[in-house]
Length: 244
Image (cartoon, rainbow, N blue to C red; front, side, top):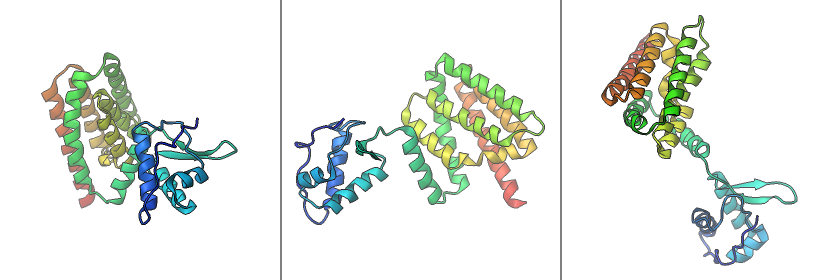
């Protein structure tokens, strides 16, 4: 669908023309004057509306594409189309930023512990019965998989991430979900190390079982205590790995 933009955009000033074009289109998207699925005018039409050249328009379109606000579709009916920004787009960008910033493992763990302390409280008060049932089933699956000889470490890591994301979803706050997706994509706070060592694997699974039981039983202080214990285990495991 193509939305009329004749009254949305105005000619830009030279010097920062590309940035101005991008900001005007972005503002139209964020204000929902342009909605997901709407097609932007052709490059020629945008040049006329903004009173600028083809290169300026193309640079602005590329900038919006990198932000994930639009996508370029090919074919006869193709062109620049407004995208629906979702959690995966945001999380992937944040995860890449964290990786490139070379954040130390202990800093990630410190942040994760603070977030998790809040998440378990929200999960207790806002989580639905079906979510709590899913949480219980997932941790049972985690324990069964960890008991296998040898266990599938990749699958253990996937289940661990799924448990963290489920608790974030139970918070009912999409911002927590975005951040948790980004952390899980970027680092998982090095939780994978806990499953590689036999003694830490057993303790980690037991800790997960206790945390889930406390969430289901609505025991906030006990749930927070098991969260803190998890990060003590993680720090011990990392210390042992780096000193060996």
